[in-house]
Amino acid sequence: ICLTDWEDRDVIRVLRCRHGFHRDCVDHWLREGADRCPVCRKDAVKLASSSSS
Image 1: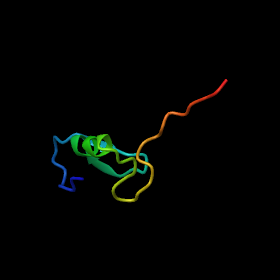
Image 2: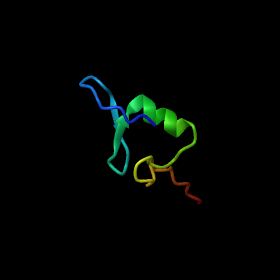
Image 3: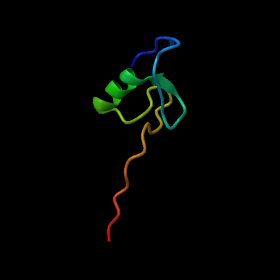
């Protein structure tokens, strides 16, 4: 994951744990199968819950 400093025009994505990353970098991280924050290892995204009837 990229840990480069943010610039004024960078687009940032903030995860559930409130850690922020460049959007493109963290999106790539998540698409590659990671589901946890690379800093604190907490769940990065909220998974959709499946409800059974």
